[in-house]
Length: 265
Image (tube, rainbow, N blue to C red; front, side, top):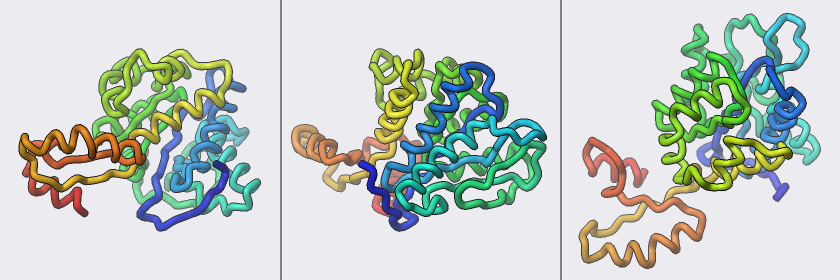
């Protein structure tokens, strides 16, 4: 579906696309993958492509960064649909950087003065994270995302930190997306595909699963009512595209009343 519209800011999801500033191997393939992901992200009605603004890793300012390729793909697609790229691309630039930066989309300067704090800023503002390859900075972003319980999808076969984090945190990642290690989607993320578009569409499909709108269910949490939830409500809500949530199923060490108030909000 190519129709794009911008809704209230409360409904928008910021998808952070991060990766290496200098592709080490399969440059044409990874560049194509980033371009396609940028396009596919903003094709989703309420999604914003979020990035850190890197153009390259050197003073020559010849494009080589995943940030740039993703933003460029999104920018090109938005303009082809006569959509203002500033409504669909958000670029958070550092205050100071040794790397060249791009100026695609809506530009904001991070208030954080150090690289570590800015990475935290990127992760905290994002609703989900996708990475391609990457070095130490991407490793920090991914581990921060996992520690903050964000939907994190490192595309493993691209190597670098994406592969390292997948191998280290595979069970946590699969649990977050509720997918099996033997699923075709996981195979594509781990082994790749000859078509970058197939990898990109798979990544989007996985992320969408974690970003479904929530339907919070208020009901008596007693055994005799569970059949109503299990046999009727659960399937109807899921088939309608929502994520069913009951307060007594929320994994929390705090007060269930606190969880219920937050869910109602």
